Image (tube, rainbow, N blue to C red; front, side, top):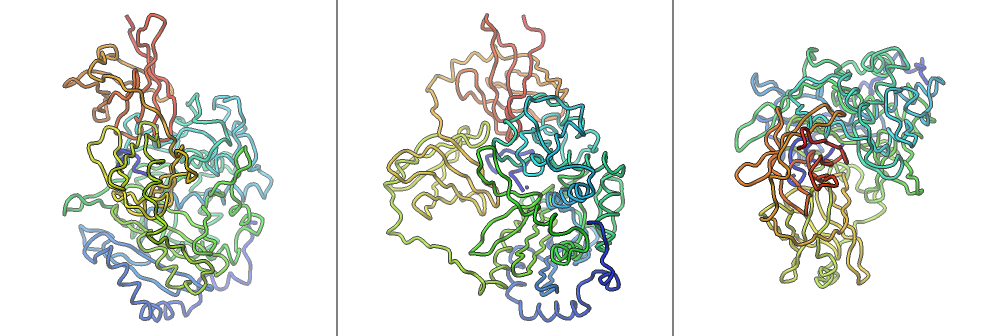
Length: 572
């Protein structure tokens, strides 16, 4: 789950069937339906909770809860298809976006156990066509998002490919492997990257000799009897009982089209019933074993020894004393969340076809409903007396959070205000702790500053749902933007790594980046020879001049793609 990929970041991740289980077809106990219905009666509170966010005549959600091997709750509400008034059920198929990633790493670990690869192999063993970056990128780097490889969605957006456009696995592989630079040295930092999982799925294909869809079908879905699950590797494939995805504008719903067909980072189509079988496999081990499952729950470690929250295809966190293993997903109008609490044999599956729905609105209230008595820690609530407005002075300043996304914090009348550079809106941030402030424009979002020791804060963390974006204090030089000679930058610029060209021109006294597929992008002067935009993939433009002070190109940095070099054509 992440900020919108094509919109502004501002406003906006052993192969053995056990015979004793085969005769049961690895299904949940035969009385599961009865228990689910009984549970629904006692869990009216949950029905009401979910119904606050989804209506019966709108796109909706399918929810299932497993406890001690059985369904204890199943609830579906809303429409899978608005055109034909087809309701959602537990057998409705949803695209689950990044929840796909755990199936990808599970496939890699199956092959590792057979001695066909190692999670610590150099990726150039499988992709000799990739550039030599000077530092080894290992499969493990791909799996825990520490590779430094540029993200596929920044790259596809840059060339004008959107969710509704056709793009195949082969096309994404070519685009990723054509990149000559990295965002950072492998292992240096954690940065969520979909490209890594596309490469992992391709490695499964190159090692096994099967397409990724064929491999996962024969090695995962069939053994687990996940009969309504498959990776979609070409968009023309007909999937029965599939929910369409939607977005809402004003009071009207529209189709949120999704035609790309690359797999690994995304691409799984499944149901809450099938996901329950997958979740139960971590307990019953019909396929896989402790070695694999332990690896999947081992946090990644950076070069400096620091642990990251991401393991292999799964995220880990502590929620009120409960150790939670989870992953969310979002593509087009699809939203998904798969949560497991192994100690209590508890799993929660949430699938939706509404872009406006956020699984976090209900996920942890459901956890509280079933496991509230298991909590060993209570959330510490701060009283008003512990909130010190004077500390806000240490937070005032400019922070760069993502490339081109700069937040300016100011203080007035014991309140902290936020304004993004280039935006006219100034927001008051409600304070919830000495160094924590709610960001009211996004649900489940807050800013956390790093210091309370009487010194200026140099860093902050922007929490957006389950993601954390780190920002650093920067100093901006005052200069007269009206005196910038925009004519210096007019011209055509080309980059061979993405094989695309942008034309910079002046439109209504503003520098604009024009592309043959994308909408015009307005460029705002930030510093001398540095421009920013409100498009996440085109966040910051740093102009390059030669010894004669002529502009000869620029470096482009997006949300998850850094320093892509464009060269100016026809320099005078």
